[in-house]
Amino acid sequence: MDYQIRGTVMQSVEITLEQGETVYTEAGGMSWMTANIEMNAEMKGGLMQALRRKASGESMFMTDYTCTSGTGFVNFTLEVPGKVIPQQLAEGQSLICQRDSFMVAEASVGLDMHLHRRLGAMFFGGEGMILQKVSGPGLAFFEIDGEVVEYNLQAGQGLRIDPGHIAMMDPTVDFNITRVSGVRNVLFSGEGLFLATVTGPGRVWLQTMPLASLAMRLIPYIPSSSS
Image (cartoon, rainbow, N blue to C red; front, top):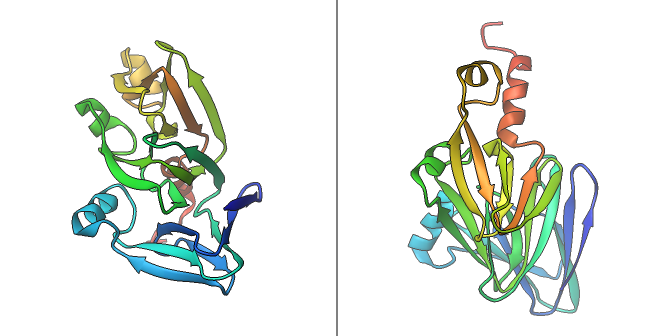
């Protein structure tokens, strides 16, 4: 299996498959493919696993793409401006990521929901109670809003972040929510009541343009029904 990431602002990933190789994505995730790629939509893992995927932001049905002969390719594009992030996961290695960030992966890669360990993180974490957990072995691709900034935190090293900017992290990274201190900071800083705190060891990927923030910026420019 080989791949090529194309583009800058609206990237796509083209995955080349040899006969018998398979990748899967959520329903409707494919953009174009060669004629020797066969599609097969199914409820992977049964009803309960499908419901867990739905809770994490993906569709209940997933679609397999298998090369039936020779060499073929299948292309997947981003839903919003951003970046495609490939990750080769070892056996037992996982990544925790925001809802709906899973893009496509080899058939051996597992996709499940992930719950925050702390109540504060659940309710004020920017992406809600439920995130995604993607586990190896295999190659997986993620879609991140805007540009991506990656930090490799040492043990005890921390960052304070607007919660919506956290895209993905290693399971070893501790995630918590802290309240912004000071009345003036709360009222006039424009950062809201809460900030996320991530503490190493482990990697964390931050996104520069969370979709929710982009949507809020566009609201003043959307004509109302009364105008």
